[in-house]
Image 1 (cartoon, helix red, strand yellow):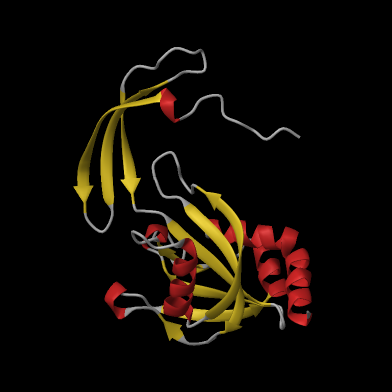
Image 2 (tube, rainbow, N blue to C red):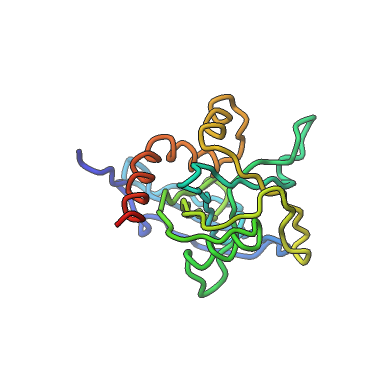
Length: 211
């Protein structure tokens, strides 16, 4: 099967102007641009706002001996709407600081947000959660859990974090996935990946431990 390749690339976008429209906890840039059309011609110039928040790394800790997963629960302001609860069960995640590797972010955030120590990491996916308006790219990993602190409250006071740590059997979490109880995008992607590839990865990691 031939991998999909877009017809156009970065050179087919002409950014004519980019200005910072807002700078706060996150930032918004306003771009004036034109781009190549599928007809081969150029579009008219247009203005678009882009939400800038930096790239992020997310990790799903997995105790392969007990077959349990660590997920965290915290308030998400973007989910404050109607009568839905804005508290979400999700992966550990954090913004990549300048000069920081994805591996370092995964280990740092696992410690800060869940009191977890991780061993091996396996890459799951790289994706844009909302590329129509946000520049953020997320890199997902599953991490071998060495130790955890389930039932504790973790997070940094300086970042106003109040995070409850859960450690649940993998099959329980996958059942919650099937029942629609997981409503966080990067957590959905990681769990669907685990449902498809988890047995293969667990067998490989257990074999490595026995060598």
